[in-house]
Amino acid sequence: MKTPPFRADHVGSLLRTPEVKENRLKWKKGEISAEELRAIEDIAIAETVKKLEATGMRSITDGEFRRDYFHLDFLKELSG
Image 1 (cartoon, one colour):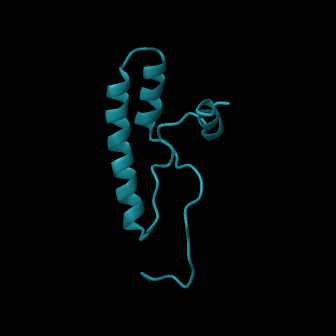
Image 2 (tube, rainbow, N blue to C red):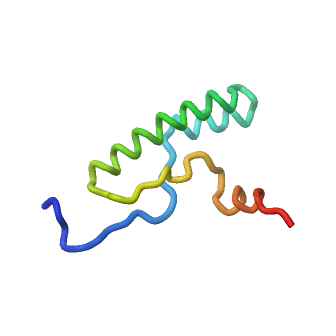
């Protein structure tokens, strides 16, 4: 069935791929650059978006692949 009788939205973070998890650790240890990590994240995000599009979802985010923790990364950006 292509059109279910209900609405479904994804809420929350998507699981990071093993490659993203592994390379975020390498970046924290200084083993790869921020640019190298971003390229790896870009690929993983593009692949994940394709999978979500295939399900018919119309509203898609990157799943916070570039954050450690939503609340901490958010709080770091506040000032005042």
